[in-house]
Image (cartoon, rainbow, N blue to C red; front, side, top):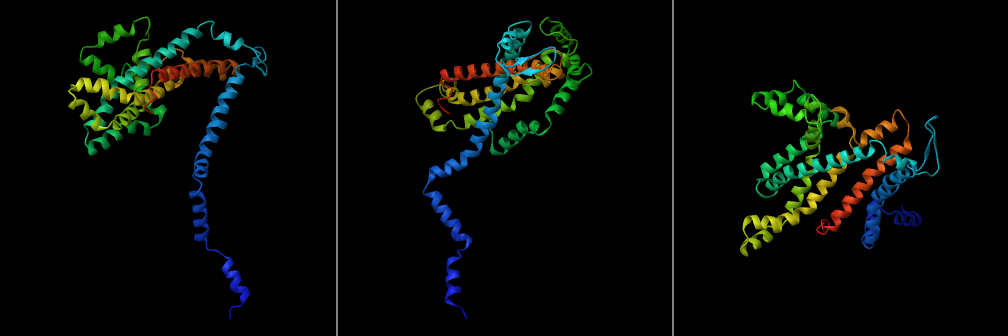
Length: 318
């Protein structure tokens, strides 16, 4: 027999579904709270971990390094930044920026036709195959891909064998003996680094361009054609401007990743880049302040690049 006390206790115990429904109703009536809960973790990570690390890095660039004892003392000095303008450091900075710009330009030239074909002409089945082909290299180890290319570019590799077969060995040797390039093999030359950089970062250019071209409405292209524009005019004045955000997004990836990379230069030659200087100062020398000051250089370069891209209106369509 159920007593009134037991009946009252049964009424006060609510099922889990009712509690979840109340929580859902509470959140539905407060959309700002939902947005806060969704954005809090990534913003916390970005603000504390990422930006906090960059702030600590910048702060360390002003610390004092004792070359005799190898000790780093908190303080404020501009000597670390003054060293960036001495010796071979300016040459290394311009070499790194030049390589990053060259890789970005080549990736743009190669990625745009692929992205355009994927967005406009490829069938759904072929598009899935092209997506897989672009993403498949990213499934393997970054180090493995670099050493695979080192083998391909070696004097005994398949690329040199092909050049010998088609009669381009002389052009290869003339290219390697150029003062700027140097080296006795493609596997230890600037050209080899350029090829590997383009191969490694090309997917990061194809995918943003393809996604940007997918967003171009077909009705806009049809309207341009109906107004009498030729296909080239439509591409130059309609398609390309609307695809600029994707090009800029891809260039940010390729430029920044090339600018700070040190593994490819270490593996494919002895030419120094910014990443190599940072690695050396963090390794044997333990000169954290100078390494931090050198790391600030790519940050300044990327900020300048983003400001220029914004000034040209590249972010207006984002």
